[in-house]
Image (spheres, rainbow, N blue to C red):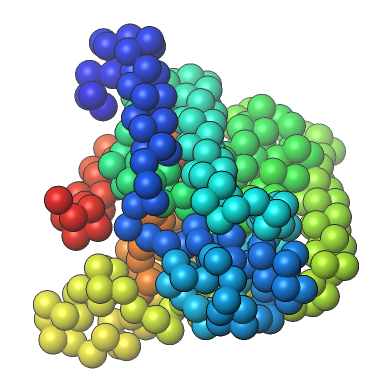
Length: 359
């Protein structure tokens, strides 16, 4: 359908997207049990009066959500905006809370596909193909919708930030980027590219700006981000103290873990090289590539495309790669006209499919 999307027409493509996303939202929780952790953290805070950034699910083993939690000794690794947004779920039954989170994941993917299609039209990319590329990816259907992961919500907010910057609404873009990061820290990858794109002598659309006007977009972007950070951070401090900042550290600590299908670990396994050495080399190469991409962005190259390559590099370099992380990359690749980027994204998807969706 991806190749034929432009010929199939809007009704058929969007009908297929809505039908399949709805079907996976209605199915039982698939494969990952992370959604039960979302519910458990909410119940820890509301029902048990415990801070989910300090206390793991194991602190309340009698809770109804605990039986399905996988990471029983892990405190919350999610942003304070997402954690607070889940707190009302504590008053529902576990089954109802999970069903609601699956609905949120489904709506996030549908919204993400719609936003990507809109941006694609602005950038001269076929919008139907872009929407199908995101929403009909099997990893998205099975793991993001079927598993109710919050990565879909984080990327919806991040892509709203991209749309806002491209439309010249940098203040809203800053708010959206900060909200995305406050859901899941992985969304931070996009922010430096948007920042440089609004600060460089040529604006995000490539049109020349004089010295005074070119400084306004970056100021609006920073003002939006700072304002959102102050509001979210203030509310988070009232709710959790400074303990919520530990979630940011947990994202980095994932590099101390390894997943069987991550690229560096697979390479080490196949070659017999030391996994720690391969992992360190991958991260070093990734850091160098990000510097290179940021320099290209500053010099006027397409910042959305640069952010896509940086996200691909992150997925290739991380030692902790999970299948739902592909949704970080798919919207950006869908907006790119780079054939190598498209092929590499498809290859990474295919690499994950065999073991991540057991048939």
